[in-house]
Amino acid sequence: MIVKNQTQLTEAVMEVMRTSGEDARFQEIMTALVKHLHAFVKEVKLTEKEFQLGVEQIIKMGQQCTDSHNEVVLMAGSLGVSQLVCLINNTDDVDGDTTANLLGPFWRDHTPPAENGSSIVRSDTPGETMFVKGTVTDEAGKPVPDARVDIWHSATNGLYEQQDENQAEMNLRGMFKTDEKGQFWFCSIKPSGYPIPTEGVAGQLLKRQNRQHFRPAHLHVLINKPGFKTQVTQVYVSDDPLLDRDPQFGVTERLVGDYVRHEEKSAEPHTSTPWWSLDYTFVLRPGDSALPRPPIK
Image 1 (spheres, helix red, strand yellow):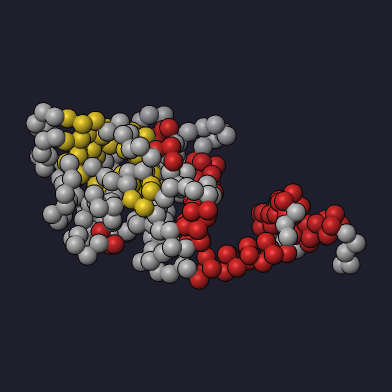
Image 2 (image 1 turned 45 degrees about the vertical axis):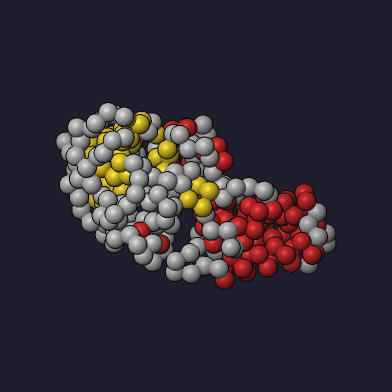
């Protein structure tokens, strides 16, 4: 197709996107992509030098992806795209809320089973102890029994166990089952925040924008049961000073947990004074119960 001008170029490309192949959803996505991408280029009047620089950054993001790091996902989070996709796919309207959130890079399949009430601290790990009770319900508020619940979080040094040779295998991880009331409970230590990697393209973006690079402290949860959409989420620590400055835009009002500090002695085992408690309810939606692919090896 011979192009006459800017307007006709965009129309020509969109026409090809609309009519190529037999996958209607793919055609819809590609047509919208071209429409908005061309509109962006026109709006900012992208220079040739800026275009070349942008291409170089995309190439670098691919080169910076390894078995243990995904720079593209990190950038998607830094632009708020990951969280937007989560909210679109887990709510019924623009302003709806959800207990779903970002998976993050550190989930591991085959987390060892643990009994309700047990501790997931598997090596000498400093920190104030924490007792967590979770309740899993459906959208009508009915308890969901016999659901798999994976738990994981960082240590007080800001590292997950597969990042830290000083932590035991599967430290601060456990897989629980909900009881007939849809509840699970366990002991651990209070999670800590940590810095996201800044050596790559995403880090350069944060530095140029004078944005801080520490994620607020959070507890990771994955809930799985046939008949329900697998839910991955993060429950953020309510006293973290960076809740409103998360570089990955993951914190929502619904996901700020009420972490309560106690000075009196706890009746729960595996706790010492002072200790923290968290009581939180997770709401599952009907859908696909497939497990995600572990983000990194």
